Image (tube, rainbow, N blue to C red; front, top):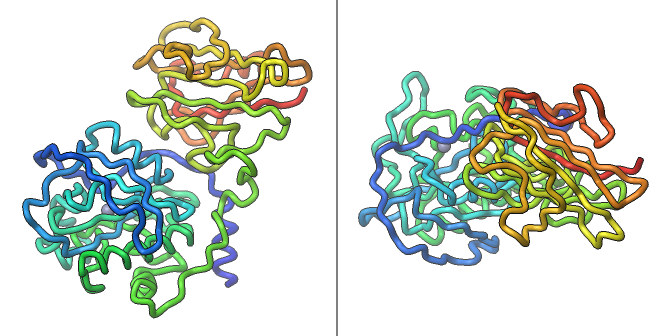
Length: 398
Ligand SMILES: [Zn+2]
C-alpha cells in the first residue's frame, strides 16, 4: 500500500501533457468504404459509446476475430477526444475501442472492420513479438487504454500509468469480446506480443501496480479488480456540476469556450481544470486557429464575454462578443491561421473580470493567467510567433 500511496502522490503532481504519439501507423493500407454499422450498445454490462468511422479502417477480408490486442494511447487524452480525432480525418492508424480515465468506452471502428493497430514490422531489440505473423490487423480487435504520465513521455519511461477505472473497464470489455467472438485467454495479447513495441507501456515495463500478468488474471476472473477510487489526478479539482469535465466557476459566473483545431470545433469546455484533457480547449501540439466563448446565463446576470486573437505573423483581429454557436461566424480567428495571442474581457457585469491562459505548441506548461486588467508581458495570453495549442478561460471576482 505504501508503494501505491507514494505512486499516487507522484501522480498528483503530474502536469505535463503534450505530444500526440500513437501506436505504429500502418501506411498504405487500402481503405474499403463500408457503411457505418451500429453495434451493441452494451458489452458485458458496459455502455459502448460510438463515434464509428471508416476513414481509418479496412475490410477484414473474410478473417474471423482470433485475437484481442491491448494497447495504450501513448499520450494523455480522453477516450472521446481520441475517438473524435480518428473520426475527423485520415490518421494512418486506428483502434476499435478507447477506454477512458473514468472507465468510459468509445468505439471508433466497427468490430466488422479491421483497425490499423498492429501492422508494421517487428521491432528489433525487444523480446516481444511472440505472435508476430499470426496476429494481424485483419484477425484482431484492438483496444486502446487511455494513459497518464507522472513525468516523462518517452516510449520507455516508467512514468506511464493507468487509472484503476481504465483497467477495470478494459478487463470487462476484454471478457465481453472474448465471449462474443470465442477468443481464448491465450489469444488476449499486447501490442508488444505482436510486434515488440513497448505497448501498452505499463503492461510491458510492469511498473504499474497492475501488471500484464495480473491483468490477465483479472480477465480470467482469478484476481479481483483494483479498487476504483476515482481519478488519481482529478480528485481535488473534479468539477461538481458541469457534465463535460470543466470545473465549477469559483466566482459563480460560468464561461464556456471551444477551440477550432485540425479542421474541426472541439467539444465545449466549461470553466477549466488543470489536468484533464477536457479541462481545456485544444489538443496538445496542435495549433488552435479559432476560438469561441461566452458566459452562461442571461446578459443581466453574467454580462458579456468579449475576446480577440492575434494571428501568427499578423495582427489582432476584431473583438468578438459572446459566441453562442448560434451563428456560424461568431468566432475569433481565421480557419487555418495559427493563433499566437488571446485576450478576453467581461463587460456589462460589475465586480467580475475575465482571465485567459494558454499553452504553446513548442513547450509544456501553462503560461501565466492574463486578465483583462493585465499589462506588460501578460497583457495577452501567448507569445508572438508561437502557436497556442491549449486554452483555459475563467471568470473571477475582482
Ligand atoms: Zn499499440
